[in-house]
Image (cartoon, rainbow, N blue to C red; front, side):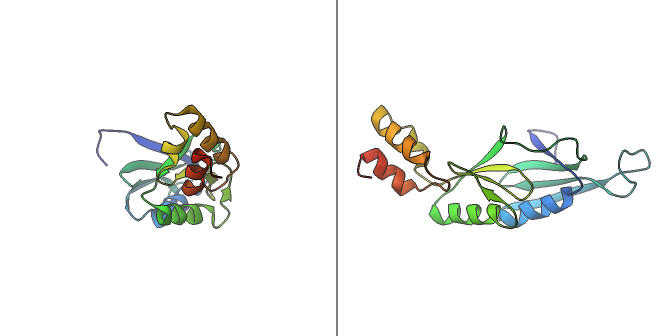
Amino acid sequence: MNSDGLTTCLWFDGRAEDAADYYLSVFANGSRGRTARYTEAGPGRPGSVMTVEFEINGQRFVALNGGPEFTFNEAISFQIHCADEAEADHYWDALTRDGGQEVACGWVKDPFGVSWQVIPPGVIEAVTDPDPQRAARATRAMMTMKKLDAAALRRAADGTE
């Protein structure tokens, strides 16, 4: 990884390598970078994984084995803008399997507790429609959903659902 741009650092409690491998299995466009190990200088056990660099969909990440002091919460999430419903289904299913969980309004928590927003095409347009009544109807419909249904949001915006 080079020195320009931004890299998101994700703090894990001993599962950084598992997390990097998991994300690389979920996202087809990804690659793994360097793995750094703790030395006798600590704070981790010498030889154990300290960080794993990886990239998915052009976004750089570092998974850090930092310990139990910090955990993920919904204050930070990653949005996945999907090209079609099949892609949205793929990410929804992949991120909720193996201990992940559906939350609400298109949000999921993956098995590591990281929050993601799976956004099918047309959703943003429906809830930000220039007509405030259409946007309100779409938003009210979205608030009842876990997994987002763009066709249902369009029908709600149109007043036909």
